[in-house]
Image: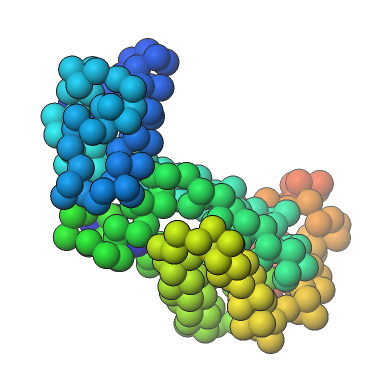
Length: 261
């Protein structure tokens, strides 16, 4: 769904001790609950402090107003999304059978939005975008790039444009279904909606990055020198992914049988 880089985190001062960090987390979670219950306009710092079980003076030590609280929530959500991308874009997940890979990603998405801050920020982005100071459509593009890199890794025969197109359809589909799910107050219906994401993505992606193609990917990803599958990414050369073998320590380019040494 980042507009531009802000030096400010929304905080009046950064907490230095663990107790202070825990208090900030509690205030942000309370703010998410209040915004969810009464809306941003009707929310107040006093309501947020009461929800957090802290004195209003304690809240003002960290935040000058509710706008600063909301900005801190934005940045907290960005941190959680970046962590989600890092945790899911791993060889262990990318090389799983397609349904298992999609299940791992969809489960991580569902877990992300179980957190009240991320849930409120996601819904507000699509319903009151003018409120945002740190997040914009560039974050959606980052999500597309993230998924495109996974699809390209599963099937190197995909062109960059094709993998990006597939990823764009997937990301916008996930966002649409998740928005509908998060906006319903019926928990059972929310779970039913979010549960359909896995089937939707598997059906759409099977012809392009399905399990029949995974074997080809695995063959390509063996070291051409010692046939080991214990590889690590090692930058790019002329637009192609480079790898270093953990066994023989030699380097090679994706789809190449020639050593870079």
